[in-house]
Length: 306
Image (cartoon, rainbow, N blue to C red; front, top):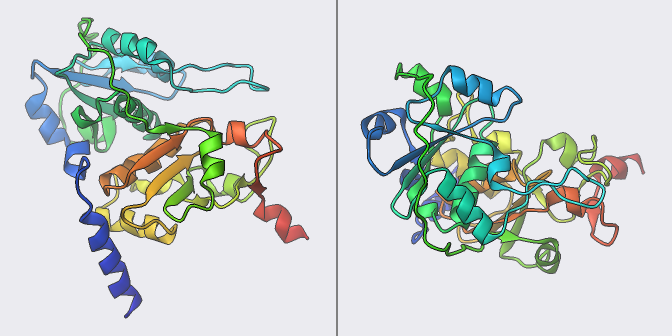
């Protein structure tokens, strides 16, 4: 069978996986959002990844959007020597944080990124999925850039701050830890993906300090920037399937991803969800793994020197 035919067969297998949210469920277009902007149950979240995020939001955002910083829905320690950044809060704390954003049991939550990085928004979406709200949460494809390119209106008026009403969260176990990753490194249905840039995966440059260079032994590389095109829109199903196939991921395999601190990897996991794959985030990521000498690391750049 020719390589192109093999790829087509595998792509069909990818897109036939059922019983999970589909690409149509997980992505909305600017046209869709414009037509639903006044829905009573819509909660629109403006996510930025810059120091000027709040200032930029005050200047221009999609009408009705609330500003969200990742610190609002995570726990971080600045003591990087022995603590971790961007960890998931307790269920009750997360519930409180989500209701403060106006999210209720019947909310339709749309998340969009306001700058040139999709990963803060996909981290928000993974958090919503963890909270049991993944079936009612979607990403605005292309973010604020796509909205403005379509000539839809912007606003400088802050959103009305109302509290949501959420039942106790039904946690969806999409977060895992180092012990689980280590125990499954030789599991054929477990596929570990490194979402960092190739220079970190290859050990050319060090990421978090203190720590080692390289990647988790056995992990494949899918830099998170490869899941979007030059307009920051999610690549086609065919293109995404090809990325995962190249990394050895089969249609029903669980994709477990990590990065520096558990943010960039969520873009890879979001792409995997649109293909129907079960996903898990190793939240401690290489910040934890890289500084533990008892956990195996591969460093291609050092291997080449020998």
